[in-house]
Length: 147
Image (cartoon, rainbow, N blue to C red; front, side):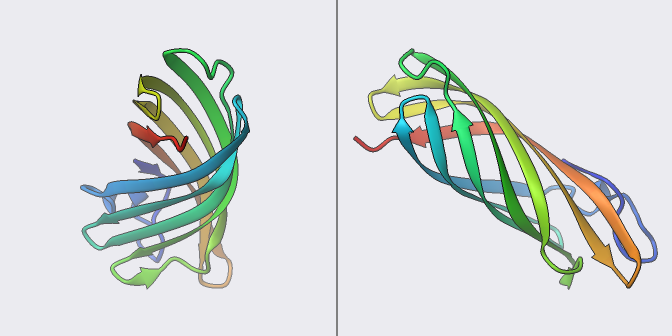
């Protein structure tokens, strides 16, 4: 759920714009070492009048990659574009993202588990006005691993 001011003259809370949105995220990564992953990711939020698209890169650390339960954490920069009722909130802005999760291996190439992600970004409107906002997402990660 986002936290921060809306844009435009009313400056309503951003959370009032995105009630009922559903995020979909996709990550593609490679592990040059079992404990280290680099990759790219994208996030799309769609809801009543809201469109939010973010793309970026990530680095994830998997300290115990060989266990049945595999904790991990990640960080990465990206670019985000948000629009409400078809009105873009300025130009695409840089965002920072942190993630933490727990993968439970259900087979040699499949894992599932909880994930929490937090992003910070800003948008500008008009010539001098801008606002910072945060997205916090709690969800389930499904991981398909190539052989």
